[in-house]
Image (cartoon, rainbow, N blue to C red; front, side, top):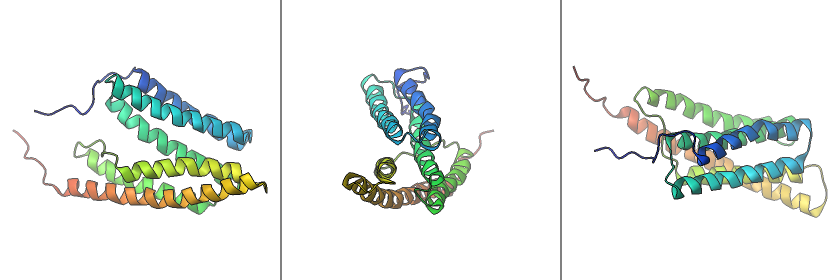
Length: 198
């Protein structure tokens, strides 16, 4: 007997709606940083997005509304925020293009592997602790770098140094988690296919 790994197949649940709202915040954040250059409001938006990330997970577990859609939306939203933050900071000449390339390369490698796994009927891999730590570090890193850029005040310098510390650690963890996912995926791909029924 197969145990369903989630509680409901419904899409329109409050946790999922919070995840959708968090996704809608991605282009707003980009405009705040690149267009309006309203850095403080951009950081506030990230803080709200982070809070909804915690709330939707808590509600899904508390109300038994974990769903496949929710399991897919959460990591997608996290990756989009990370890549959007870095792209915005690159366009503002705050971080180098190389950092964006390093982060995107990891996701492209995993995307190729996931396309192979989908042909095996695998639509996702379980999130590991290293991946969560990487996301946490990166989502803290770049708002701090943004707040610390372009100022000589003590608090700005502190934000900049702390932000880059999180960025370096987070990037290393991001790739470490990626290698772990690659190993999981490779193990699945090496397993023999089940015999087809006729």
